[in-house]
Image (spheres, rainbow, N blue to C red):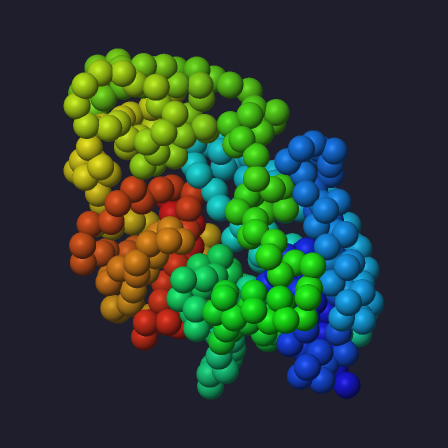
Amino acid sequence: MEKVVVGLSGGVDSSVAAYILQQQGYEVLGIFMQNWEDDQNSEYCTIKEDSLDAIAVADLLGIEIEIVNFAKQYKDRVFNYFLTEYQNGRTPNPDILCNSEIKFNAFLNHALSLGAKYIATGHYVKKIATPKGNILAKAFDSNKDQSYFLYRLNQSQISHALFPLANLTKPQVREIAAKLKLPTAHKKDSTGICFIGERPFREFLQQYLPTKPGQIITPDGKIVGEHLGLMYYTIGQRKGLNIGGMGEAWFVAGKNLNKNELIVVQGHNHPLLLKNELLANNLSFGLGINPPPGRYTAKTRYRMVDAKCSLDYRDNNTLHVVFDEPQWAITPGQSVVIYDKGDLCLGGGIIT
């Protein structure tokens, strides 16, 4: 019987993933990852509640569970990068790094040391075997597909991973959990920062990065307000600008780091918010090779519709993507993820 270690997060998805693997005849061991310790007792930290839910699920399914602390690895590999990116005026996506560095690296290595052949998670994504190796593809439930967040997984990580929810919809997962009377069946999904939880973001960042107020200006240099620090704003942001006056809504369109200025424009479809092309580096492709130049589709944010594009390279580690239609609020620090044949997730890079 092959051993699989499941990351039990205390949520419904990983709970049902563990049950499905049991039904498929695997020897299943659960692990709850504790990756955040800075403010464990705050109202925003759900570690205690989540760990109790994970233990209750393991108990009901009759599987062993271990609580493992990866807080140091999380701080070193994910959180420090996250802070550095914000300090440099970019908007990182910690969930993407969290997957490649913690869930499919520190956790994977721990599972292999226990003699497991695979790890499994509650992610909605497929794993497809091709002649060149394993590759990720979009999940059956297009509304829940998480391939965007997993694009940085390499060949070894994909090969050791199982995704039991690949062909299920979220309502089906909840239905299975309810039938089994799992304590997580009706628990709401978490949407906060990976492992840190849902909390007022600006207040959270202020604990780690000092505020550095400056002017909010229009493209022609008119001062329209004051910002708290460029790290608290992202391209396309509308809320929290506190700019008065009449006319259309204001949006963040750019940042001048040298002058500590936040550039804003009026109107959702202002030309400065629309871009036809981007450059990305820090590339990561699942098969370990850059896909050839040509026609693909791409996403520059999780919830957007795939956009048709052409892809080429400026050098071996700089991707150049040209879109057929202008894309809204392309944001440095976020990821561009490349898809082929509609649903094969090839990989991508960090937008510069």
